[in-house]
Image (cartoon, rainbow, N blue to C red; front, top):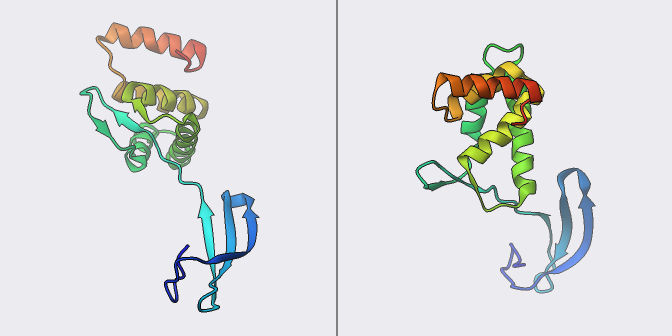
Amino acid sequence: MKCPFCAHPDTRVADSRLMEERNAVRRRRYCPSCGKRFGTLETAELKMPSITGHDKKRRPFDSGRLCADLTAAAQKCADPRQIAGETARLTELRLYASGLRDISAAELVEIVLEELFGQSTEAAIRFAALHKRFDSPEHFASWLAQAVKTGGKT
């Protein structure tokens, strides 16, 4: 690592400490050239998968859009922000853990619905009505009957 004071290209690690609450390592470093000390914080860089839409275009995952869509779906529930926030957090954790580079929009909707059914059935139904592709009202009705029966696992 380059020294921030003198730009010497090689610094040494004096001390390392694991910060479990942030999944990070804090390191104290010193520069053999100028003798100054400084700290660094190292964290793992986790990338969200790209979302492949119905038009086959790849787009970056947008957590703001997900939260907005979830808040809109949960608007008539008791605590829409809590439901949207918790569902978005759980969905993002699952996407990080999946290790996938790309995921289809339909698969993302299924993941969100599984998490959302655990929070609010009403919000899950509203979200599905907006984001799943139903061919007809009968198709929606059959999906709804199956989803309510199985708790969202279709």
